[in-house]
Length: 420
Image (cartoon, rainbow, N blue to C red):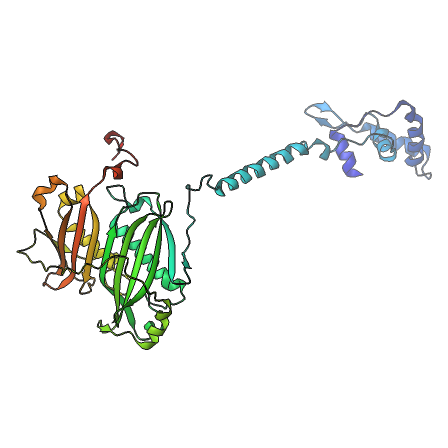
């Protein structure tokens, strides 16, 4: 009752109906003395109340015009409800509309994050870790060529392709459930401190993919002699199905502690033989002997090549893909500018550690660098060796003239648009 009266002081109630005056006076007379008070006492109380000053707000008198009106509003239910603080709040529909707008905006942002391509070739990143196909003998994995994997020719570099091949091989071992705690080693190999090392690699590149292309890599393994394993790869254009790259390699086992080659133990053979296929190599073996180069037979020598920490794999020796980069660094610049690598054969003879310093030697076969203007296929011989002369890798590379189509995908970049 006190709260209602106080609120009514700021929000005056509506005027009562004309015929309610006598009833109110009669009720007030009954309340004034509670039947035990005399008329004089009632008059004194009324006079005292009348003597009090009316409350003012900002100089204007406010309050009850008649003392009986407040009492009347408390006892009469037929009068309209007083204007209270709750009645003065904003329209709730406006607040509801604001909340709805916020939820709609959040839903729109979520739909943008959950955007799906409208065309099949607009793939974002639908690639997982691959899968085993063809009766469990072939492992298949897709890769998207990223912008940081292309070179000056706007095509994927040979190192990019080789890294994808190596990644597929490791995922094959993992997908088959044979991955131990080593780098591609099976559980039995880990028990015996054995690791895989590559001894020979042959690669043929029919076409290099470019930025945004999706490639499919298939890989499988076969026996190679008594103590070796051959791994083959085929890299396809996932859109057209055409073959882009073929590779075949031979792997043997090495003791991780003694760094000596080892035979395949029967326990390890029992793990890997169920996954062997009876197939011919995807790259016909080049039986030509790789030449040994020296300072007299080499046309170009690049010195001072040392591995960085990032060039080492988990077995603490230089990753075999890094050797390819060092071989290309030893090739003459006119070849790199006018030709592209079409095939290579590598023989790995010794491992390279983090403290070694290497030299890259290259000899150009055939017509030589002086006749590059003829744009005929050419061949080079390579050797990576330590400074003390110990051989690391012997190699042979084949080159073909670059095709103009490699530059037609994006068009030339205006020099004035490049900011430094």
